[in-house]
Image (cartoon, rainbow, N blue to C red; front, side):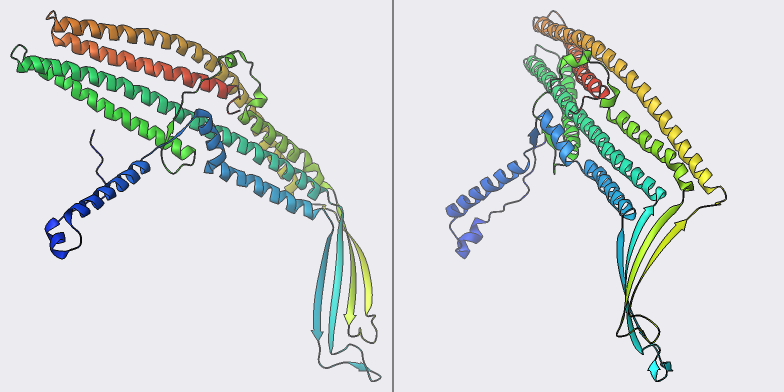
Length: 445
């Protein structure tokens, strides 16, 4: 593996320092060594990767991921709209202040009918008496708040599942790295033995080159496995909103008892979201008839005229009004609006039925996947153990001169392949159990 270069350079010119009298060489070297230690420690600490347990990674992703925060703003917006629509159905008070100046001033018997400068202050109380449309819209806005809250729950589940999958990818990649490193070490030991025999004149160059080729190939696989780990760590770091890669600190253990739990559709966030959306759409469709009802609003206004009202007016007065608005003809607008709402409701019903059917299918598939991957993992581990035993036998036979190194290399490749299959099978078991938890609506808790 290529060594990481230090992010600084240090040049030393003892002759220049000696002539300039800055410090003697020994003191300068001591300070340089101290700087090297400090910089090396800082550089090493900067390369430290944060490690989280499985539960810590899930909790942090749910709490800190920007996608969830972005979805949460939808709740705030829905609540603000509900507050606005609720205010429309409640009384309101308004005040106006007006100043009028006229010229010329009309007079009667020497007195001004209207003063030259006059101020008018009006206070109005407006009370919605009957507003069926506004009441309907307010109820619909309350349903939208519930939809926004359930949307956040569904987004939270998706982020948690993505974090869990990235966490499992780190574990699987690490197992693959360990397997490839072991294969590389075995290949190196075989190469050292073949090269020693070749240098001693009792082995062939062909055997040495074969062993060297296998060792080089294994080294390339080691680098690929390390890159896969780093990519999975970076993905997990993004999901948990970290400033760098995050490593897995433990291996999650999923409760096997969950495999026998029944499916409850209400525990699935996607099904629950569609249920809330259907209820909201049902309310909107049911409220369509309210658009045919009249609306009644009462206004009470009090006014004050200063400095005087004029010759034929009172300085103080009040007025009460009752407004009735009755929709009579709209050229089919309300009929089209009702049809649109019914179509939206039916669309959500079909979507919910499809999601529920898909959910039951996912549970059946996940249960079968858990059973199948468990059997496959057991067989794969047996095959890996057998392949490792074959490697030991062929290596002993080669050292005794009973076989060529072709058999050894074939055995090593077969051991690597079967070991990789065992790692894949173990990862498949973990992912199958995770998928079953998700399908049952029990992840995250």
